[in-house]
Structures are given as C-alpha cells and as structure tokens.
Image (cartoon, rainbow, N blue to C red):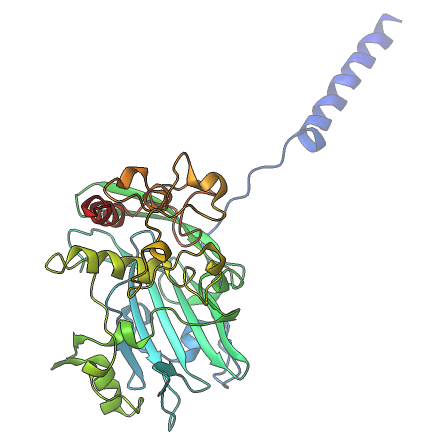
Length: 367
C-alpha cells in the first residue's frame, strides 16, 4: 500500500511538471525581429502600384540608402517641416513623362502617376548631421485614378531596401542629440489607414507639405540657388507659375531672425492646420490654425474649447494671452498622454523647441 502511495505521488508530480511545461506556462513575449526578407527578384516595374519593394520603383541610383535621385526624381523642401519625433526628412517628387503639374485656383494640381517620396531617418549624432544615418521608413503618396493613396515602406536593418507594410510598425531608435545626450525613441510607423487621419481634406487624402505656400522660396540646387517652383517650371514639370510675388509664402519657424508671431504661425500651420482648418477633420472645433488666420477667436484667443474634454486639463482657454502655461494649446503640445497630446499622431515625444516657441509667442501677447 505504501509503495502504491509513493508511486501515485511520483506520478502526480511528474504529471504536474509536464503540465507546467506545456499549458501552465504563459506564452513567451513576442519578439519583434528586424526585416530580413530578401527582395523578390521577379518583381517588375510594370506601373501597377504599389510595388512590394521600394527599390522596384527605381527612384534612386547606386546604393539605395544614399538616396541619390535619378534624373526624373526632383528634390523638394517645405519652408517649415512637420515635427516627427526629431526625425530628419528628405523629400522628392516624380512626375510622369510628358505630364505637368498645373496651378488651379491657387492650388497645385498633380497629374495621375505623380509620386511624392518622403524618407525619415536619424543621424547617429545630431551634433554632426553628416554622421552615419539610419533610414527608418519611406512614405509614398501616389496620385492614382481615384485620388491619392498612401503606402508606408519600412527599411531593413542592412539599409539595403524597404518593404511595403500597410499595417505600419515600430522601431527603437537610438541617437545622440544636439546637446550630446543619448536618446532612445520608440518610433511609430503609421499604418495605411492612419495616414488619412492627418492627410484629410474634405474627407479625401491630400498632401500636406506640397502646397504653393510651403514651396514658394529659394533653395540651393547643385550649382545654383533659385525659387523651387520656378525651378520646377524650368524643368518642365510645372506650368502656370507666375512668379513668387504672386503667391503666398511661408517662412522657416526655426529662423530666429524672423518675427516671433510669424514663426509661431508658421509652426502652427505646418503642424496643426491640416486638421485645424475649415476643410480639416477638426473643423468643428472652431480652432483654425492656418498661417494667415487673423480672427482672434478662430485662433483660439480667450476661446473656450468645444470638445477638448479631459484634454483641456484644468484650463479654460485655448490661448490665454500673456499666460502660456494656462493655455490649452501649450498644455496639449507639452504632453504625450493619449487623449491630451496634440497632434494625436506622428509623435511619441514632446517637441521642446516647438513648445518653447509657442510659449514665448503667447507670453508676448497682450489681452
């Protein structure tokens, strides 16, 4: 009897151990491995977008990571840049042969087949911007028959190619900032549907930075410096541009030589107005942050928010003149909390310099 009891205990112990090793154990946490998939060498550039691999488009010559454009791909740069967790960006446009961008009612009208190419990367050391860089993603906006479509491409660890990932993704990014401090960012890559959250104009997906007001200024080319819209016209990809003086022009909000109020409005325009405009998804807020907004109430001065909810914190006004730290605008810019942070997408960190710019502007205001 004693032997039977011992055997029974031993059997139950072994059974329990086996159970723990299988169903009792919690599953191991998912490990997000870097992209190692090799490009499909049979993928053809047949014009049926999107391609699986960024390299198939043939935008760049030589090593893909050098981002050296071919003759049909043209560099562009907006006067002010949208903040995206301190990522650096390089931008290009490809217009189909024999097609041209036109200007209609003060807006750029792009032919079908136009592709906007935006690369997001980080130098390893921001004190030396030309240091080794790591490209995280490339976003394409393609003008198709039915309108613009967005396609996110995530780069592999080897920096040899990027693959289409409509579900988006995330990457841990490490770099040394301009103050020499080491930083770690959990960089979020939006999925295809999230792109429309910001690129939303009257419920259709539209580009943000490729507008006349953002491009109407001079930049350095290889051997000259000229207005980039005039340059596009010289290249034959744009028609109808009648000179820079006939169109609105933005400034660079980083330019400390400019008037503080103009810098602040440039910042709000590029970072906020794609939602906070009459044609944007935040139109019902009554807060319109375009660079040419003059109405104090629409700008948020002494304005009680319509539907900020908990995002307003303990504050009453979008902008409280002379009291930036009691203004909802600064409060939401200075937060990463879901439901409070503005913009809602595109950043997981606080843009300290941007917050300081808007804070200085509000503190300078008089009631």
